[in-house]
Length: 89
Image: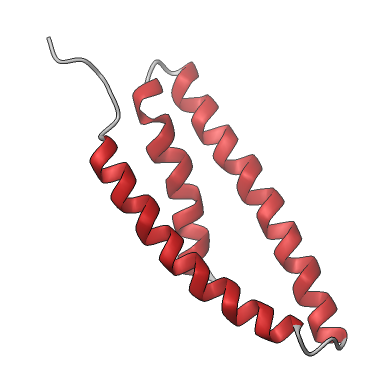
């Protein structure tokens, strides 16, 4: 019987891709914030709200995986939350 374990190689690859994408997005957003005007303040608030919501959603996905007996999918599902958010921005 095959053990249910995460595909660590794919998870690592996906994490690196997300890191590269996230750095690009963060650079663009920080450039906007650097202006220091009302739009910058709005961008800062939006970023904070998005990060908190993404963290909550990722934890929910991981917990859902564990509660349904699919704990081996928890890391992938949590990471996918961040991947979707990074692409959407």
